[in-house]
Image (cartoon, rainbow, N blue to C red; front, side, top):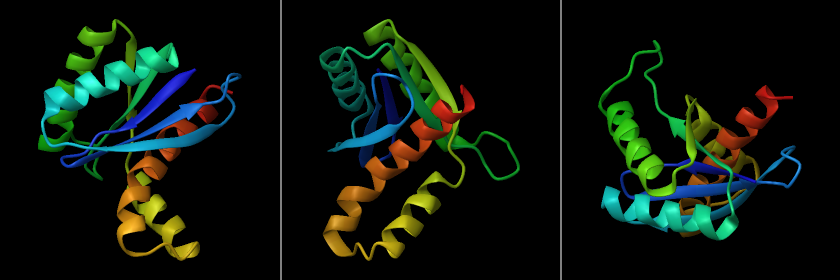
Length: 135
C-alpha cells in the first residue's frame, strides 16, 4: 500500500492505494499548521496502514522552478523520511488542486464540505498520477 500526501500550510490531505497499486482512494484531511505535528501524524498514519512508500505532492512553479512552497515540502519530506524510514517520492503536483476544485464544481460540492474534501481529493490525484506512471 502506498500513502499519498497533499501537504498544505493549514490542511494536509491523504489518500491510499488499493492493495494492487491500481487506484487511489481518498482517506482524510488533517488540520494542523505545525510541520512537525503534521509529519508525526503522517508517520503514524503510514505505520497504521502498513504503507510501503509515501508519495508526496511536490509543488513547482508553472515554469518548473522550485519556490518557497517546494522548499518547505522538501523539508517536510526529510522529516517524514526520518520518522518512517520509508521512501518518500516527491511527485509534481502542478494543477492537482485545480483539478480537485474542478471536480468539486462538477459534483456541486460547496462550502465547508468543499474545504474538507478538496485536499484529500488532491492527494488522490497526486497518488493516482504516480500509480499511472508505473503501469
